[in-house]
Length: 306
Image (cartoon, rainbow, N blue to C red):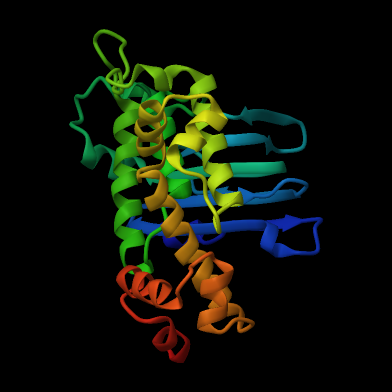
Protein backbone atom coordinates (compact mmCIF):
# COMPACT_ATOMS: atom_id res chain seq x y z
CA UNK A 1 0.00 0.00 0.00
CA UNK A 2 1.29 3.46 -0.87
CA UNK A 3 0.22 6.10 1.62
CA UNK A 4 1.65 9.00 -0.34
CA UNK A 5 -1.35 9.24 -2.63
CA UNK A 6 -3.81 10.16 0.07
CA UNK A 7 -1.29 11.80 2.37
CA UNK A 8 -1.01 14.44 -0.32
CA UNK A 9 -4.78 14.59 -0.68
CA UNK A 10 -5.27 17.07 2.15
CA UNK A 11 -6.60 20.40 0.99
CA UNK A 12 -7.26 23.65 2.81
CA UNK A 13 -9.93 26.17 1.84
CA UNK A 14 -10.50 29.40 3.76
CA UNK A 15 -12.29 32.70 3.60
CA UNK A 16 -9.21 34.89 3.86
CA UNK A 17 -7.72 36.42 0.72
CA UNK A 18 -4.13 35.86 1.84
CA UNK A 19 -3.10 32.20 1.84
CA UNK A 20 -0.01 33.16 3.85
CA UNK A 21 -2.06 33.04 7.02
CA UNK A 22 -2.46 29.26 6.82
CA UNK A 23 0.50 26.92 6.41
CA UNK A 24 0.46 23.18 5.75
CA UNK A 25 3.71 21.22 5.57
CA UNK A 26 3.82 17.45 5.34
CA UNK A 27 6.55 14.83 5.31
CA UNK A 28 6.27 11.31 3.89
CA UNK A 29 8.51 9.48 6.35
CA UNK A 30 8.00 5.84 5.46
CA UNK A 31 6.01 3.92 2.87
CA UNK A 32 3.11 3.88 5.32
CA UNK A 33 3.67 6.86 7.60
CA UNK A 34 3.51 10.65 7.21
CA UNK A 35 3.50 13.72 9.45
CA UNK A 36 1.66 17.03 8.90
CA UNK A 37 2.10 20.49 10.45
CA UNK A 38 -0.87 22.86 10.12
CA UNK A 39 -0.72 26.38 11.54
CA UNK A 40 -3.11 29.29 11.13
CA UNK A 41 -2.96 32.84 12.42
CA UNK A 42 -5.49 34.75 14.46
CA UNK A 43 -8.61 35.76 12.56
CA UNK A 44 -8.41 32.96 9.98
CA UNK A 45 -11.33 30.63 9.35
CA UNK A 46 -10.61 27.64 7.16
CA UNK A 47 -11.53 24.05 6.43
CA UNK A 48 -9.15 21.12 6.25
CA UNK A 49 -10.40 18.26 4.10
CA UNK A 50 -8.91 14.80 4.68
CA UNK A 51 -9.72 11.39 3.25
CA UNK A 52 -8.07 8.65 5.30
CA UNK A 53 -7.90 5.16 3.79
CA UNK A 54 -9.30 2.29 5.82
CA UNK A 55 -6.86 0.62 8.15
CA UNK A 56 -4.97 3.83 8.82
CA UNK A 57 -4.47 5.28 12.29
CA UNK A 58 -4.69 9.06 12.51
CA UNK A 59 -3.38 10.90 15.56
CA UNK A 60 -4.36 14.59 15.63
CA UNK A 61 -2.56 16.63 18.29
CA UNK A 62 -3.68 20.19 19.02
CA UNK A 63 -1.08 22.38 20.68
CA UNK A 64 -3.11 25.58 20.50
CA UNK A 65 -6.58 26.66 19.42
CA UNK A 66 -9.82 24.80 18.80
CA UNK A 67 -11.30 22.86 15.91
CA UNK A 68 -14.25 20.67 15.03
CA UNK A 69 -14.04 17.34 13.17
CA UNK A 70 -17.07 16.65 10.98
CA UNK A 71 -17.90 13.08 9.92
CA UNK A 72 -20.84 13.37 7.58
CA UNK A 73 -23.54 16.03 7.89
CA UNK A 74 -24.36 15.67 11.60
CA UNK A 75 -21.70 13.81 13.63
CA UNK A 76 -18.82 15.88 14.96
CA UNK A 77 -16.07 15.88 17.61
CA UNK A 78 -14.30 18.89 19.12
CA UNK A 79 -10.55 19.10 19.68
CA UNK A 80 -9.00 21.88 21.75
CA UNK A 81 -5.60 22.89 23.14
CA UNK A 82 -3.47 20.12 24.66
CA UNK A 83 -5.73 17.32 23.39
CA UNK A 84 -5.05 14.37 21.10
CA UNK A 85 -7.63 12.55 18.98
CA UNK A 86 -7.25 9.00 17.65
CA UNK A 87 -9.20 7.88 14.57
CA UNK A 88 -9.08 4.34 13.21
CA UNK A 89 -11.50 2.40 11.03
CA UNK A 90 -10.43 -0.97 9.59
CA UNK A 91 -13.54 -1.43 7.45
CA UNK A 92 -14.02 1.77 5.49
CA UNK A 93 -12.37 5.00 4.38
CA UNK A 94 -12.87 7.92 6.71
CA UNK A 95 -13.37 11.20 4.86
CA UNK A 96 -13.85 14.13 7.21
CA UNK A 97 -13.67 17.90 7.44
CA UNK A 98 -11.87 19.89 10.11
CA UNK A 99 -13.05 23.45 10.77
CA UNK A 100 -10.33 25.72 12.13
CA UNK A 101 -10.93 29.12 13.68
CA UNK A 102 -8.38 31.73 14.67
CA UNK A 103 -4.90 30.73 15.80
CA UNK A 104 -4.39 26.97 15.56
CA UNK A 105 -1.32 24.75 15.88
CA UNK A 106 -2.01 21.17 14.82
CA UNK A 107 0.19 18.13 14.20
CA UNK A 108 -1.29 15.06 12.49
CA UNK A 109 0.42 11.68 12.23
CA UNK A 110 -0.83 8.96 9.86
CA UNK A 111 0.44 5.40 10.13
CA UNK A 112 -0.86 2.07 8.85
CA UNK A 113 -1.66 -0.75 11.24
CA UNK A 114 0.92 -2.88 9.44
CA UNK A 115 3.66 -0.33 9.99
CA UNK A 116 2.68 0.16 13.62
CA UNK A 117 2.82 -3.56 14.33
CA UNK A 118 6.29 -3.66 12.83
CA UNK A 119 7.41 -1.05 15.34
CA UNK A 120 5.90 -2.77 18.38
CA UNK A 121 5.99 -6.37 19.55
CA UNK A 122 2.65 -7.87 18.53
CA UNK A 123 1.96 -9.15 22.03
CA UNK A 124 2.53 -5.71 23.53
CA UNK A 125 -0.30 -4.64 25.83
CA UNK A 126 0.44 -1.04 24.92
CA UNK A 127 -1.44 -1.39 21.61
CA UNK A 128 -4.65 -1.77 23.55
CA UNK A 129 -7.06 -1.00 20.72
CA UNK A 130 -5.37 -3.26 18.16
CA UNK A 131 -5.38 -6.56 20.06
CA UNK A 132 -7.43 -9.59 18.96
CA UNK A 133 -10.95 -8.73 17.88
CA UNK A 134 -10.32 -5.09 18.73
CA UNK A 135 -8.29 -4.76 15.54
CA UNK A 136 -11.50 -5.30 13.60
CA UNK A 137 -13.42 -2.55 15.39
CA UNK A 138 -13.36 1.15 14.66
CA UNK A 139 -11.79 3.33 17.35
CA UNK A 140 -12.45 7.02 17.91
CA UNK A 141 -11.04 8.54 21.09
CA UNK A 142 -10.03 11.89 22.55
CA UNK A 143 -7.66 12.42 25.48
CA UNK A 144 -5.63 15.10 27.18
CA UNK A 145 -2.04 15.15 25.91
CA UNK A 146 0.58 14.04 28.40
CA UNK A 147 3.25 16.65 29.06
CA UNK A 148 5.85 14.52 27.27
CA UNK A 149 3.72 14.31 24.13
CA UNK A 150 2.92 18.01 24.30
CA UNK A 151 6.61 18.88 24.41
CA UNK A 152 7.28 16.73 21.36
CA UNK A 153 4.43 18.39 19.45
CA UNK A 154 5.69 21.87 20.34
CA UNK A 155 9.17 20.97 19.11
CA UNK A 156 7.73 19.78 15.79
CA UNK A 157 5.86 23.06 15.40
CA UNK A 158 8.68 25.37 16.37
CA UNK A 159 12.08 23.81 15.67
CA UNK A 160 13.62 25.37 12.58
CA UNK A 161 16.13 23.40 10.52
CA UNK A 162 17.62 23.40 7.07
CA UNK A 163 15.60 21.49 4.44
CA UNK A 164 18.31 18.81 4.38
CA UNK A 165 17.90 18.08 8.09
CA UNK A 166 14.17 18.70 8.54
CA UNK A 167 12.87 15.39 7.19
CA UNK A 168 15.25 13.37 9.37
CA UNK A 169 14.18 15.43 12.38
CA UNK A 170 10.49 14.86 11.60
CA UNK A 171 11.02 11.12 11.22
CA UNK A 172 12.61 10.97 14.65
CA UNK A 173 9.79 13.02 16.13
CA UNK A 174 7.16 10.76 14.56
CA UNK A 175 8.66 7.77 16.36
CA UNK A 176 8.82 9.85 19.53
CA UNK A 177 5.10 10.65 19.22
CA UNK A 178 4.27 6.96 19.02
CA UNK A 179 6.50 6.20 22.00
CA UNK A 180 4.87 8.85 24.18
CA UNK A 181 1.32 8.13 23.02
CA UNK A 182 1.42 4.37 23.54
CA UNK A 183 3.62 4.44 26.63
CA UNK A 184 1.95 3.06 29.75
CA UNK A 185 3.81 3.58 32.98
CA UNK A 186 3.25 0.97 35.68
CA UNK A 187 3.05 3.78 38.20
CA UNK A 188 1.04 6.11 36.00
CA UNK A 189 3.89 8.61 36.19
CA UNK A 190 4.98 10.94 33.43
CA UNK A 191 8.19 10.54 31.49
CA UNK A 192 9.22 14.08 32.38
CA UNK A 193 8.91 13.92 36.17
CA UNK A 194 12.45 15.27 36.33
CA UNK A 195 10.96 18.62 35.29
CA UNK A 196 7.90 18.83 37.55
CA UNK A 197 7.32 22.57 37.03
CA UNK A 198 6.39 21.86 33.40
CA UNK A 199 3.30 20.04 34.63
CA UNK A 200 2.02 23.42 35.76
CA UNK A 201 0.09 24.83 32.82
CA UNK A 202 0.70 28.39 34.07
CA UNK A 203 4.45 27.89 33.68
CA UNK A 204 4.02 26.48 30.18
CA UNK A 205 1.98 29.58 29.28
CA UNK A 206 4.76 31.79 30.65
CA UNK A 207 7.36 30.01 28.53
CA UNK A 208 5.20 30.45 25.44
CA UNK A 209 4.82 34.12 26.35
CA UNK A 210 8.61 34.40 26.59
CA UNK A 211 8.91 32.97 23.09
CA UNK A 212 6.46 35.54 21.72
CA UNK A 213 8.38 38.35 23.43
CA UNK A 214 11.73 37.47 21.86
CA UNK A 215 10.13 37.05 18.42
CA UNK A 216 8.29 40.37 18.66
CA UNK A 217 11.50 42.11 19.73
CA UNK A 218 13.97 40.05 17.73
CA UNK A 219 15.94 43.10 16.54
CA UNK A 220 16.61 44.11 20.14
CA UNK A 221 15.79 41.09 22.35
CA UNK A 222 15.82 41.38 26.15
CA UNK A 223 18.45 39.64 28.25
CA UNK A 224 17.44 36.35 29.84
CA UNK A 225 17.32 38.08 33.21
CA UNK A 226 14.93 40.76 31.94
CA UNK A 227 12.88 38.17 30.04
CA UNK A 228 12.52 36.03 33.16
CA UNK A 229 11.35 39.06 35.13
CA UNK A 230 8.79 39.95 32.45
CA UNK A 231 7.19 36.49 32.53
CA UNK A 232 7.65 36.16 36.31
CA UNK A 233 9.83 33.05 36.32
CA UNK A 234 13.29 32.30 37.63
CA UNK A 235 16.05 32.30 35.03
CA UNK A 236 16.69 28.60 35.72
CA UNK A 237 13.06 27.59 35.19
CA UNK A 238 12.79 29.69 32.05
CA UNK A 239 15.96 28.32 30.44
CA UNK A 240 15.23 24.70 31.36
CA UNK A 241 11.56 24.88 30.39
CA UNK A 242 12.27 26.63 27.10
CA UNK A 243 14.83 23.97 26.13
CA UNK A 244 12.42 21.14 26.98
CA UNK A 245 9.46 22.62 25.12
CA UNK A 246 11.17 24.09 22.06
CA UNK A 247 14.26 21.90 21.80
CA UNK A 248 16.71 24.81 21.76
CA UNK A 249 18.14 27.49 24.01
CA UNK A 250 16.33 30.83 24.04
CA UNK A 251 18.86 32.62 21.85
CA UNK A 252 19.49 29.52 19.75
CA UNK A 253 15.78 29.41 18.94
CA UNK A 254 15.76 33.12 18.14
CA UNK A 255 18.79 32.80 15.87
CA UNK A 256 17.17 29.95 13.93
CA UNK A 257 13.98 31.97 13.59
CA UNK A 258 15.83 35.03 12.29
CA UNK A 259 17.74 32.99 9.72
CA UNK A 260 14.57 31.35 8.45
CA UNK A 261 12.97 34.78 8.22
CA UNK A 262 16.06 35.91 6.32
CA UNK A 263 15.54 33.14 3.79
CA UNK A 264 11.91 34.21 3.33
CA UNK A 265 12.99 37.82 2.83
CA UNK A 266 15.56 36.84 0.20
CA UNK A 267 12.98 34.64 -1.53
CA UNK A 268 10.64 37.62 -1.83
CA UNK A 269 13.12 39.44 -4.07
CA UNK A 270 12.47 42.66 -2.15
CA UNK A 271 15.63 42.62 -0.04
CA UNK A 272 19.32 42.71 -0.74
CA UNK A 273 21.53 40.70 1.60
CA UNK A 274 22.61 43.70 3.66
CA UNK A 275 19.03 45.04 3.86
CA UNK A 276 17.77 41.70 5.18
CA UNK A 277 20.60 41.61 7.72
CA UNK A 278 19.77 45.05 9.09
CA UNK A 279 16.03 44.33 9.13
CA UNK A 280 16.69 41.23 11.24
CA UNK A 281 18.73 43.16 13.76
CA UNK A 282 22.27 42.24 12.71
CA UNK A 283 24.64 45.13 13.37
CA UNK A 284 27.08 43.83 10.76
CA UNK A 285 25.86 42.04 7.59
CA UNK A 286 28.94 39.80 7.74
CA UNK A 287 27.54 38.23 10.91
CA UNK A 288 24.30 37.42 9.08
CA UNK A 289 26.24 35.97 6.14
CA UNK A 290 28.34 33.74 8.40
CA UNK A 291 25.31 32.51 10.37
CA UNK A 292 23.32 31.90 7.18
CA UNK A 293 26.13 29.83 5.67
CA UNK A 294 26.53 27.81 8.87
CA UNK A 295 22.82 26.95 8.94
CA UNK A 296 22.03 26.45 5.26
CA UNK A 297 25.42 25.49 3.83
CA UNK A 298 25.62 28.40 1.37
CA UNK A 299 26.08 32.15 1.61
CA UNK A 300 23.01 34.35 1.06
CA UNK A 301 24.46 35.52 -2.28
CA UNK A 302 24.93 31.95 -3.55
CA UNK A 303 21.48 31.06 -2.28
CA UNK A 304 19.99 33.86 -4.39
CA UNK A 305 21.96 32.68 -7.42
CA UNK A 306 20.60 29.15 -6.95
